[in-house]
Length: 504
Image (tube, rainbow, N blue to C red; front, side):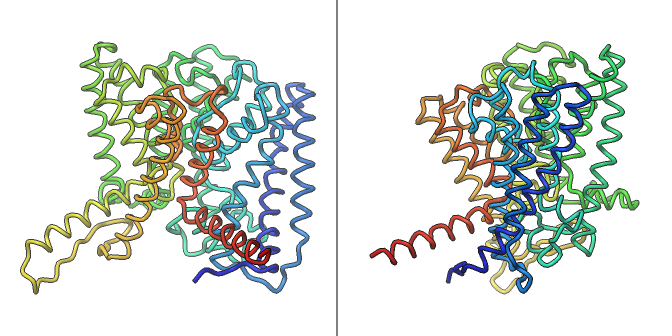
C-alpha cells in the first residue's frame, strides 16, 4: 500500500529542500570571489543575484515548522529527489545570466550535468566563458561527486534526525564508518586530499608546458575536479586534446581510476589493508571489464588503421576505455569514437559506460559490484541445476568482508540493472525518434543514464528541446539510482489521482 503524504509531510520535505537551496547559495561565494579577483563585474552580479534567490527561497522553505517530526525513509526519498532538482534550478541561474547559454533550460542542463557528474554539456563558446562561470561549472561536479546530501551531512546541517535514510536515498549503499555523519566527513576529507595532490601535480605539469601561474592553478584545479570526481567538465571544449600532453593525460588517468574506486576500499587501503584491492569482487570485476574492453578497443583501432603505433593506441584507446567508466574526459573527437574505433571498439566503450565505476564512488553506471553479483547469481543457478536435489549450495564473495550471496542481494542488484537498461532504452528510442542513427542514439543515451559524459556529438546547444529533457531525466534518475525518483513520481501520481477524485 502506498503511503500518502499529508500536509505535515510536505512541510518536512520543503524544510529539508530549503537546506539544500541555502547550501548551493552559499557555495556561490567561491565564484563570486573568483570574479572579484579577475574583475569580472557582470558575472559577479550574476552570482550575487543567484545567491540572493537561493538564500531567499531556501530561508522561506526552512521556516516551515517541523520540530515534532523526524525524517522517515519515505520522506528521505522525496527530499533527495526534489533536493537535487531544486539545487539544479538555482545553480542554473548564474549560468543562464551569462552569454554562454541559449536559454535557462540549457543552463539547467549543464547545472544538472555537473551535479550528477555526467559531463555532457550544451555550453556555447566555452573558450571565452568567464573564469567565475567556469569555476562554478567545476564546483558543481565537485559537490555532486560526493552528493548534496553528503555535503550537508558533513557539516551536520540540520540533518541529524534522518541522516542514514537521507544517505541511503542518495544512492549510497554502505557506510565507511559506523556513524553516517563521520562517513560523510571522511568522504570529503578524502576528496580534499586527492584534490590538493591532483591540483599540485597538474599545476607542475601545466607550468612545465608553459601556462602562466594563474591559468595553471585554475586549470589544475578544474582538471582535478573533472577527473577525480568523474565529472568530465574540462576547461576547454577540446577537453584534454587542448594540452597535447601525455603527462596531463597520465595524471588524469590516475585520478579517474582513483575516483572510480569505492571510498570504503580506499579507507581499507589507507588503514593498511592493501589486499582489499585485489580480493574485493568489485575491484576485480572493474579491472576485468576495463582490461577486456581495452583489448577490444585496441583491436578496433588496429583494424581501422587510424592510430598507428602502440603509444597512440594507449593514449587514444585505453584512455577512452577508462574514461568511459569514469569521467568522460576525451583525447579524441566525438566523431572519432563513432567512426574510427570500429564496431567492436564502440561496443566496448558503450559497455564500459553502462557498467561505470564502484559503489560509493564518484562514478556512475550500474556499478561493478552489481555486475559481479549478477554474474555469481547466474553461476549459482547453474550449480544448483547440476547438483543433487538435496544439496545446499552457497556462493561466497569478498566485498570488504566475506559474504554469502543471498536472494535479497541478487534481487537488489537485478532491480537496479533492469531499471538502468529500461531507462537507457527509453533514451535510445527518443534519440532515434528525433532522427539520430541507432549508434548515436544508443551511445548518448547510455552516457546520460550512466552519467559518463562521453559524446559522439548528439549533445549540443542545437539539440532538440525534447531530447534535452529526456537526457536530463536520465542523468537525474541514473545518479540517484532510480528508487528516490520513482518514489517521488509515485507520490505525484497519488496526488494527481486524489485531486481528480475530489473534482468528480
